[in-house]
Image 1 (cartoon, helix red, strand yellow):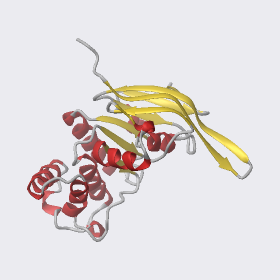
Image 2 (image 1 turned 180 degrees about the vertical axis):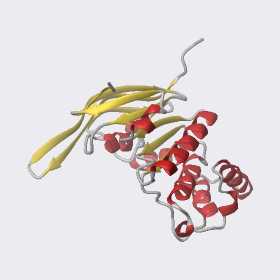
Image 3 (image 1 turned 30 degrees about the vertical axis):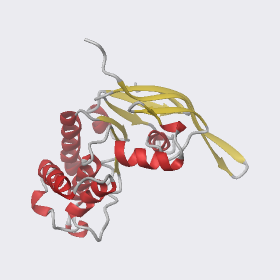
Image 4 (image 1 turned 90 degrees about the vertical axis):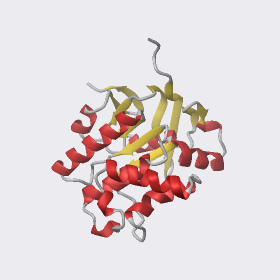
Length: 229
């Protein structure tokens, strides 16, 4: 059986930041291959560059050197507008902060992504129903974020991230704002939905429990990636 195709390929990825007169090398020539359908955890201390790496993979930021290839597209060769469109269509994001629009209902928070991708109203409604059923919030479709618990808000965020069937899901400390019990249930949900749909996921986390659910765990240290001990 042949190996699955690569969904993420990084070559020589380098990112520097200036702090006054000093230059800080955050990512130092990183190479990384992630196969389609694989889940990979990215660990490292605060400030080690985990979020920076996710932002480069997602096309939010551009590297100082190196290339990012996602789903067969060289993201680093795209213009800023092209990166925005690519990100909107092919990338899903889940953050520690839920980032829900407070003036929109649960259903409309999910619908927003589908509208940006020009999905028809009928198809969008069916997809929203499908995702809210999957995350156990079908009965909260008309509710607003301020009446939801933290775990419920993160479930909505997961539904929103997956609604357009992205090639890659990027998760940045997805359980960081949740208590242990809620984090466990949200993590189990995220893992099941990602694997059932065959998505590729790269997750930045401090949590050993989150990392243990992934196929591979990598450590970011002094700008370099290495397998976690």
